[in-house]
Image 1 (cartoon, rainbow, N blue to C red):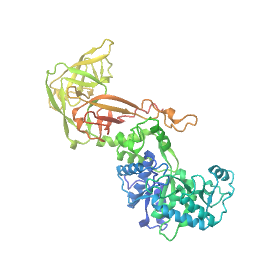
Image 2: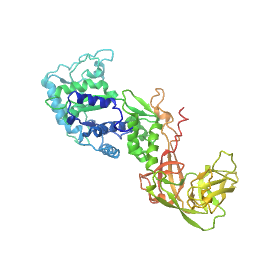
Image 3: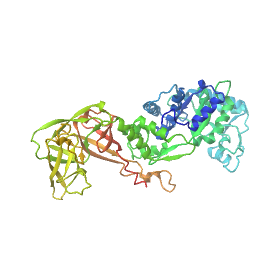
Length: 559
């Protein structure tokens, strides 16, 4: 569906309504605000596409802002990884911002709230604060420090800032309403002491602002017009607005928070804590393991930015959380790779095929198209010889009429080459087939224009010349979890659903031209799937990751 014909989603409807009610389109500005405490995953990709997509739709700026207020978990390497992910998806931010840019302004505003009687230093323990806040069905009660004097609060807060107190001695709380039906409004914490070095500010600060205090104020400083968050932040909206009420002056834009639903993908987990556990326990090789649904993992596996963006666009923006089947993501991946990936021949489970009537020592170079979809990509030369590798599953000594591959007495075509007929096979002492013999029709060469070359047979096999074959390592990746929702079972740990067959490593035989494929490029192994050159590749050994099979192999398993 074209962009012009696509109906607005409800987020776009909100923006359009604001414009109709007087908001100047010149004041539109959006942001994507990740916390740099891990790598982004497929869920973040949808949020990236939403915010930057709005920037493209309205031709307005989008900030990339890092919510870096917890030095205990955040690192510069995550900042760099997130920037790479956003750029790889094809987006450009207007301003690169950090919440830490605003630490002084946030502190100054907090001091003003204390002076206005809207904030106080609480010296209770975290357990006492939790008990004092009540429950969703029982109101909270005022704590013993709620009515400290302004002077004492200012003195204590400055002491917190100067590092005079330990991490659990004091916190700064907003003074709102301990009887509110919204527990987030029951005097939420604004600042806590954290004795850790920050990745940007070092040890300059000993106190760090909480998310709720930081987020709306950062939006206001940057003059963000619309702040879009996932649904779990809906209860936070009231607090977002209350904090803005305390600081908004005569600026042109007051930010508006609105929420949209998460789109979780089946057979995955997206919790950073759980992803970290997979890394720490060695289930995966790292955050960019191709089985991980981090953006860096998907990129390493061979996913394209277009596939992810098309997926995000197809599932849309909704008001209710939803589980999207992994098959839907893979559909968009196959659709994109089918258009952009070159075709090559690689035999994953090789068995020797000897063409007995092909001249000994003879070799020839055959022409093979690089793409069946795009003739402009031209052709490559593929060597052909007497001894070839074919897939083990492509031969049966005897078979019924529905088997269209090679068998004794039956003809098939070798892709871009000749028609052959199976004649015999060699077996070991256990009866396993170790070698196949066939004859070829020398007049049946593909593209030669002879009558024999136009003869039709039902089966076509891919192959690789044995003497020219390039041995490559192939990593066959599959879903990391064996069930669609591994983290929703309350009686079992999500680790119990790890798919034991999520990775197998084999040695395959590839055509020699594959040596020229650069790291990161994805190609189609004809009849087998799409595969990407892994960064582990060396001059001595190329490594390919299976990106996705040609067809969905999980549909029946999930039924």
